[in-house]
Image 1 (cartoon, rainbow, N blue to C red):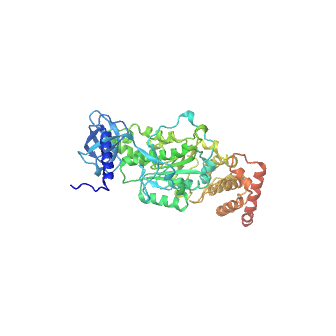
Image 2 (image 1 turned 180 degrees about the vertical axis):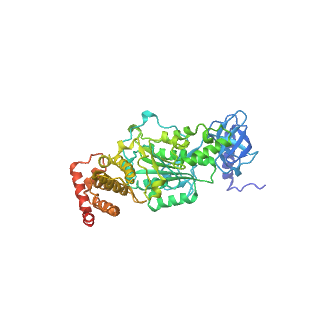
Image 3 (image 1 turned 135 degrees about the vertical axis):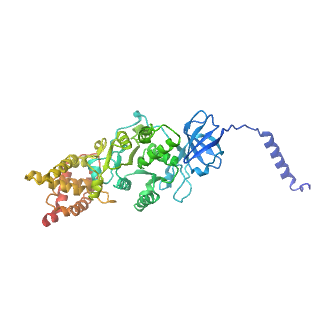
Length: 511
C-alpha cells in the first residue's frame, strides 16, 4: 500500500483523527422491539401472537410495510384490523409494535386535496407536507368547553333554511331511501359556503368511484374544492380503512375548529360505515346483536358525532357542524341504525321517495323533518317571515287529502289550498342554485303576505326569479341587516314589500 503524498498527509491525519474520536465517543445502545408472528389471515383482519405489551387501538407494522390496528387483545393472540389489502400479509409474517396510535396529517396543506384516511394523496398531487398530525380517535370536548348554538349555517336551500334551519355546531342527520337526493343537499351546502368563511370536509365512506368523482368534479367546477378537504374510501377498499375514515376526517376538521374557524363536515354515508364495522366484528368473532351488528354500534357513532360542537369563546369559538347521511330501506325510519342516529343527532332532514317521484325537489318531507336547535340560530329576519310556514304547510297537506274526496269547500279553505300549492311550488329549488338570505326573505315575505296568490301557478318559478333579481338591488345596508342578528324592522319590511310588488306587477296583469 502506497503512503499518501505529502500534500494529502494533513488531510489523511484529520480523517483518521475524526474516526478515532467517533470510535471513542460511540456508545452502543440496546433497542427493545416487540415482534410477533401472523398465524391467521382473513379478508380485512389478521390474528397475531407474540406481542404481550400491545395496547388497544395501537398501530402495528407488518413485514413489508403494511399497517394494522389492534382491535382485540386476548391472552394468547390479538386481532388486528388491516389498513391495506389482505394479500400484502401472509401467515408467518413478522409484525411489530409502533408504540403509537393511528394518526393523520392535518393543516391548511390539505385544503383542495383528495386523500385517504391515512393522509395519502389520491388526486395525483404531491405528498402532503403537513408538519402536524393528530390521532384519528380523539375525545370529544367537555360540556363546560362548549357554547350554545347561536349562529346559522346557511345551506342556500329554501326548504331547509326556512323550515328546518341548521346552526353552526349542530348535528343534523340527512336520511332517506336510495337515490332521493341526500348527497345533492350536502354538496349544495358545501357550495353555498364560498363566501361564508366556512371550511368544509367531505368524507366519502365506501362509495363507488364514479359517484365520488362526479361529486368532486361538481365541487371543483364551482370552486368549492378550494376550501374543502375530501377524505375518500371506495367500496373495494379494506373494511378497516373504511372504518377509520370518518374519525380521520373529523380530526382534520377539528384542527381548523381549534384554530377558531367554522367547519362543516359531511359523512357520506354512515350506513356503509356501520356495515364495515359489522364486517370487522364478525371476522374477529365478536358477539353479534340485533341484525348481526355488534353491541357497541351505538357507541361508535355517538363518540364520532359528539366531537361536533361549538367551542366556548375562551377556546377560540370555533365550531364543527356535522351533516351525517344515512340510507333507509323502504322508508323504514324505525330501522336499527336510523333510530340510533336519530337519537344521537339534533334533528333530521327526511327525504321522501314519494316526493322525489312527484318531482318535488329537493324531496324534503317537512312533516317528518325537524331541527331541535337551528330555530334559535336562525337569522331574525328570516325567522320572522318563515316562523309559521312549517305549520301552515303541514295543515295544507292534510287539507289537500280531504279535498280529493270532492267535498264542497268554502272560500277560506280554497284560499288555504291555493296558498299551499304556491308554497309547495316556492319550496322547489333546482340543484346548484342556492339563494342568499336577502333573496329568501324577499320570496318568503311575498308568499306569506299573499302577494303570490294572484300569480298563476305555472308562473310561480318565474315570479320567484323576478323577486330575487329585484332584492339584489336593495341598498347594501338593508341587505346587511337582513343577514345579521337584527330583527326585521317595519321600514325594511315595507321596502321589501314594495320591491316584491313592483317585481310581480306584470304577473298580476297576465293573470
